[in-house]
Image 1 (cartoon, rainbow, N blue to C red):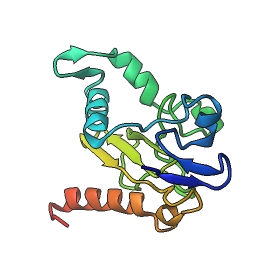
Image 2 (image 1 turned 180 degrees about the vertical axis):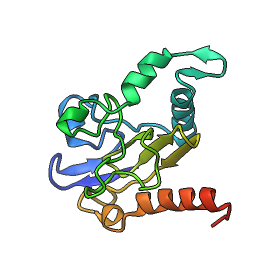
Image 3 (image 1 turned 90 degrees about the vertical axis):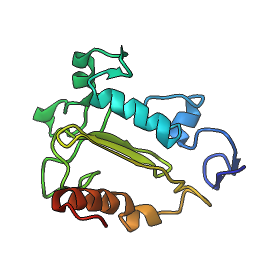
Length: 166
């Protein structure tokens, strides 16, 4: 089933290929394209990272490797990102890719198609949002304009902090 009518880059319906144009130019595999899987698979991977590299009694990564991948790098250059993941914006005057309630330990990724995953080790929280922002085409910017992902993430924290279900 087609998932995007790519009007700009490929000028065709995209079926079963990576959406991100940069990743597509690299043959479909690149470090900037990340969320390929279903919610269960992403939850397992994120739980393994939350567990510092271990899942189901098996160690896949050293804890020091997980720490390296998920901590902010090059802080002296006002960089908020980790080696593999994005991080909350530390400067409150700048927009952040995640909810303001997230702890500084939070790490995650927002994908080209609108999907996102965030892990907050301080609260033992994994947030996964799967979507297809590029349907019908990549000009669809409602997800960003309406701030849907961050609003949902914020509601999760508010419910957690208040003890009230939404």
